[in-house]
Length: 228
Ligand SMILES: [Mg+2]
Image (tube, rainbow, N blue to C red; front, side, top):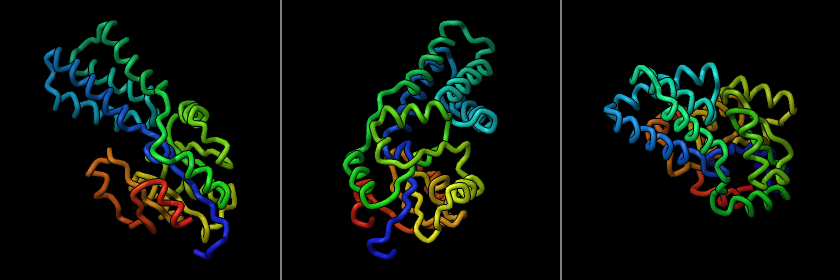
């Protein structure tokens, strides 16, 4: 990287700028507890849910409301019928994630403010459009970013589309995020340089999928200031 040259930094949001996955894990544990109380072994509930999620994200994408729909389907498959009480409990689990207060990761605000003075920052996230835009607004980080892209899927084609649309110069554009698959491998395949900032809740399974190593690996978001 040429020192002093303004870079374009595309920054993932969930579990890079703020907490996210931990809310899904909490909701999952509550669902597993509830289903266990109804005689359903946790392992079977979890396996059924993962199958439903895989199928549903292809149609409905990512996000807490689609997650709740997967929980509901799982309950229906395993229990035969879902009582109105259970149904509203499940809906509340999804809503609880959707409306959750934003908890920024340590030193994110100060780091984004400093970086915004040096470089062009964009939020590049995936998920449910209204849900993701709502989180950006509530985060208070919007002023530091030139724009926000909510992708349906973070794959090489989607990255190529936004690179093309905004005319990003590949020689000085970076994707920064916590997900090996969607932030690092997919963006590298589209020609971007990458910065991997792992989050503590990352699944070990995902780690193994780093088929293209990141340009940089950092411990915390704040460490970006040492490089940019
Ligand atoms: Mg993420």
